[in-house]
Length: 325
Ligand code: SAM
Ligand code: SF4
Image (tube, rainbow, N blue to C red):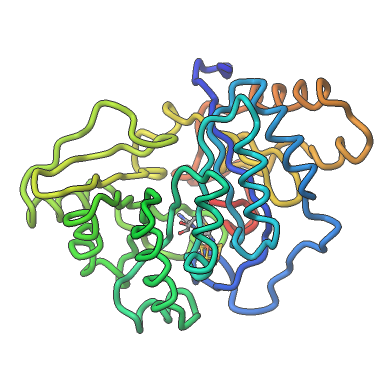
């Protein structure tokens, strides 16, 4: 359905857990992580109810996220059940990749359309530093297996000054020889991200053009949302940019988010939204749930205010692992 600013909202990111086996420095604190109690997290049935009601409003693409979604035992059944909803066309998952090797075969059977894997460095020691976990080899093994069995992969990488600036060319090169898209996501000033210095998309593009020559912008959509994609003659895959901070984001924003505790967030930037879990647990019916999600979509603000100095009082204070990215 269209929101108040004429944007077609057809994409839902639903977080199925706020727990994670990593502690990426820009996303989660090292210790004393306050996570939800099991009974606070959406159940299998509640997730399906929300996806079903959302699909009736024109949500056709659903991304399962977290925390780390592969930590949840019922993740494969969830993907299968979401995929079976008649109005849902595309179900994808974003993961840190540690459990991919074990789960990708079942995910493929369940009908997953593609997998996004987060990878900020290709250097094992630096991987351990940024994620605070020594799991680089497991992630690479998972990526290879996913590729071997023919599931579409997108690599998500957050460029960070003083961390992976010198690796941008190499990270992009993943999509040179393989039909894998690499997407650079600007660091957002949310939660711990606020104390990191990101690198703008235009700066990344300049670095890549110096190395590989001209990248031409693809006019047609190549993904689920506001990512802009580029093609270079030497590359089999595409390079994508999610310029959440610098540019071109809000006017193409087609998404709503549901946190692991069932809170509908119309915009990443603000803490406002609707407690869908509370409503479901109070016995709301399917039609009423659909109406509530519609209200949420119609309350989607025109723009974020990541760049504003004096931010509104309703600015989001959650960490990204609690939102789902
Ligand atoms: N654990 C899964 C993963 O890492 O893909 C799913 C959840 S994670 C919150 C989703 C995405 O959010 C990851 O690609 C991560 O790099 C990104 N992310 C986390 N904090 C961020 C920030 N402050 N700015 C930009 N992206 C961020
Ligand atoms: Fe976990 Fe993903 Fe956040 Fe890293 S980015 S701590 S893997 S939720």
